Length: 78
Image (cartoon, rainbow, N blue to C red; front, side):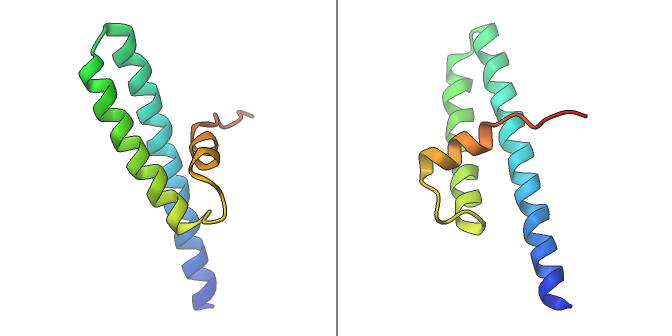
């Protein structure tokens, strides 16, 4: 039973990281719209750190480029 709890915790962490990465992507778009270029580079740096963390905890077999594309994928809506 403990292994299942650990797996659920990892899945929750992955979901949280994907959500934050997507929010940062939105913030980058807004920063670009209002012309805050310094903010864009800071946000890109933060996003890359989160993508690396995501790769380490769950998708070690994907390349950094593949992980970045996965993290930026927009979730579907019902």
